[in-house]
Length: 125
Image 1 (tube, rainbow, N blue to C red):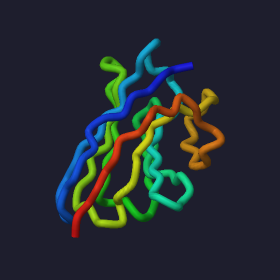
Image 2: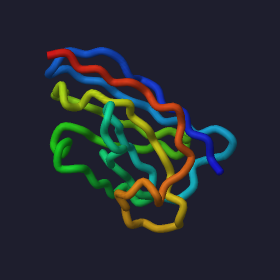
Image 3: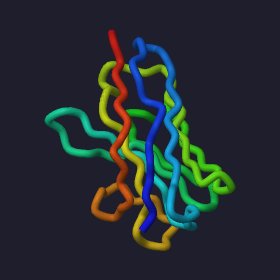
Image 4: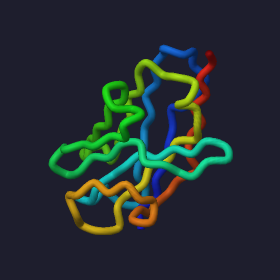
């Protein structure tokens, strides 16, 4: 099982940008879907964005057009570029890998593993 480490979070003003990174340790990225999730206090962990081996991506409606997910398999790293941040984007952001060898980008947390400690994103209004 891959171990993933998220980084890049911080405090940013509304309208600002951040780039999160998700690095794999222990082994190289597989060909499985990689995804970003987030969890705000008192809320369930929710899907944000995912990307498959072919480079196809999917986004939640709340971030579409503002966030961009990418992966660099040579560096075993996935990124989440977050622009035009809003206070409602504040959360702990996690990355994970789909358990199955599928190119379908699934949104339910039960399909994923390798969760790291997450990285905190705070957006001030």
